[in-house]
Image (cartoon, rainbow, N blue to C red; front, side):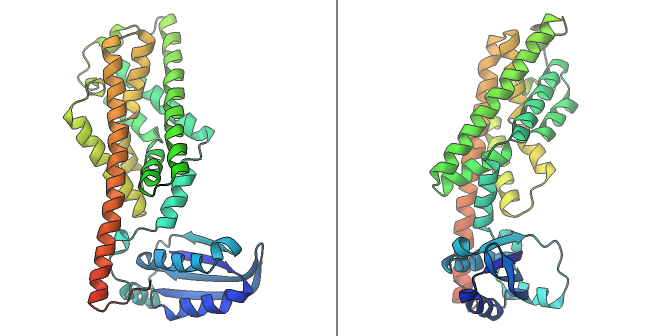
Length: 317
């Protein structure tokens, strides 16, 4: 990870000396007096992922979060010998380390809400509704690709795990408002389509071999939700989030929302409960799995570091 720090002048030497003394830190650069808002010295360095949380905790204790500034970006490649030596000095594998400050910051960003989130969720739900009408597996995949909801589910899991009430409430509120809006707009669109003769209730109630699973939750719905929650949280905490993980996760949520919207608009009461249950089961399952995954990551990483301390590996507190 690359850190860019703005350090108040009275703490610059202490911060610089501490970073230089840590073998897990390399490529250290100091630009005296270069920063203007806030004022101070600019210090840049590269830190192994395994050491980033340690370094950030120490910087926070020095007051840089309040009096200075901290920014970090991921380094895609660092082939130099110095970087390789720093990696060897840090115990564990990079993907196993969780940078908690980055996870929390990302969670707050996801829970902030924007018109883009509502737009993508609504579009995904509408695509899913067309997939239901046409019984199209391809359109189900299209809806899954567009769905943006897992970032908010992950933020909810982070808020619950770290006992951040504000984050938890914001995430839950955004999920509820997002799906209510998406389902409402999709239902209104379905009513318009019915008015012009494009669809009727038989399109929803007919046999759907490719998409019928959407409104029929069973034990496998819970299994998929748990697996999706674990995969999604791991991808985010390891810094490996990608579109494929998003596709896997959205299979359990957006299609159910599309089916629910159609069932409400065209009035297929026997499917309303099933679609709503599918959506609820999977959102709850993903959230619970995310909380458990975060807990296991913290416990396993701390246990690993304790073992390394006993064997003499250098780990800075």
